[in-house]
Length: 77
Image (cartoon, rainbow, N blue to C red; front, side, top):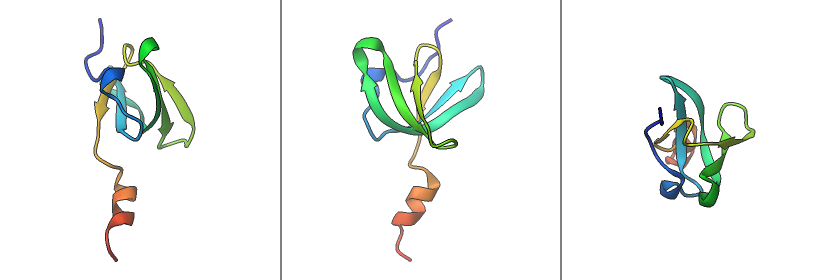
């Protein structure tokens, strides 16, 4: 069964995504690189701070709004 969601053609560097599998959130982070020919992409994982190579055929990829901690830094004090 193929996961539904976003393909690499719909991703851009800087996008914030969540990666889900069987109803559970596995990764959340900012896209740092996209390899459309291989249908793979890299993120900077928000939880661990490490780079992760993700396969959108194995995970359901969803665009999400900008992380709350980043948005709060942009608001005037």
